[in-house]
Image (cartoon, rainbow, N blue to C red):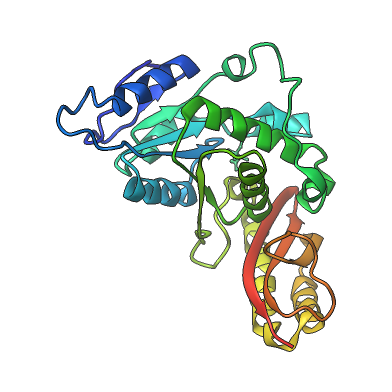
Length: 303
Ligand code: PAF
């Protein structure tokens, strides 16, 4: 794949950079104004971290990044550190050429696509970011260490690219919470922007995992957004009503095996106390056939 140190925003296809040194050199060149002589304007850089297998949800992140930044970097790196099941890592779809085609014309300037050896030259790093208490709940309970792996690679990507803003999709609500927490706790000089979940025609949240669903499973998968809708419509009647409505919407579809359904506080990502009223988030994870799906929705809990 081509190594390039310049990015041409007007070109439809992003340039591909595979090394940290190349990435830093490309952005240093943009920031020093070498490409655009004239009064120096600060160059705003946005990073959209991905593991590839791009879909319309990723494209929405890239388009938003292009609205707010001068240079848009999309990282494509399947991070071994965040997989707890080796077969999951192995079957994770990898198609750089296909991903580049999907990005064309949407405002990505640079694709940062390092090999595993580039980001982890001495093997998986001994130094890791720990996600703390929330990292062990919900997604973290079924995948111990997953969020330490996510935060460690996000920290490395932020260190390699040095963006002003980093964008994530709301679908991965726990990941978003933990990245925001890391950025605050470690005083990282970057703003986290969250982009709303993009949904398919029947409200199923777009996910790279949807491709693993067969026809029956795909139909069954819309149970997840239905559960969220049921929760939202009961939200003015309080926590118990929300949980009862959501649980009853989750039952009855044999192909769907619920992992967790919870109402969390937006500030702590911990389950809300009994009697709580105010902003909250309903989160759900379920296995549909062999495929694990997650989704979430903001609600306002009334009495
Ligand atoms: O959400 C993802 O695709 C990954 O967890 C991320 C943030 C790119 C880190 O590998």
